[in-house]
Length: 355
Figure: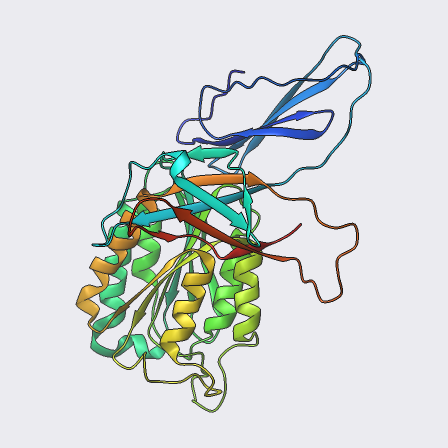
């Protein structure tokens, strides 16, 4: 096939179908694949569907001469983005496909797609602008640090800006226009409470339908709490926010600011603020960074940017679900990614909900 994208966009993936059955997914050129159609002789419709980083899609098809018979099967590709570091925390960028193993629910899976090339990413910058961000010029420093992060985006990357205080507010739909994003950052003001869980849910909804790599970069310095301190700040709960993240299959990178995140509890006194933020990151395949001084914000954003540049793309075909799921089966399927390099550490999402 010949595949091309509009200026400023990049190809995320190409799906190949035979009679509406997915036969393979290609992530890198050359866009070619050899497929055995079997012994049947009826006509076949072959279709290619292309996904671009700007959100657009395109498809084309061709019908072969008369062939006979075909088995029709629906296959879903499970994509996993993994970061690998050595014992000193340095990125390992030279790993081969055969050094990875992927297991779903404890059962090894064949890696159908493997790539170490950087893929375009769709981001949501989720910024806490509650009243507490006024302290020590935190918001001013956060604006500057986030603007530096935007400046390092690749041309094919896109980012949206969503801020939250008493509730979430979408400032900018995902765009690749860095100047627009930086102007938006400079315009936000701090006031009100902290609707953290509502904001996370809104960010997950904004990005959940996107194909390819996607991430939420969250900056927050407080717990989910109303401005008067007399109740929670969100309509959604911690559990609903976590569920939204996992179902949207988005990685969450957290920058937690404040000196008492490890000791201070949430409004219901069930979890520490640090454990809440860390769980959003670790279960989604992201990472949490906790800083006590606003001056370290730039370093945190830089580390997230570096992490997004050093990811492997792994994919396998989803094992068939039972005809009838057992009672109590929510569809959650745990994933474990390992590498054979000694003392290497892998960061990847904890699982997915079967479709």
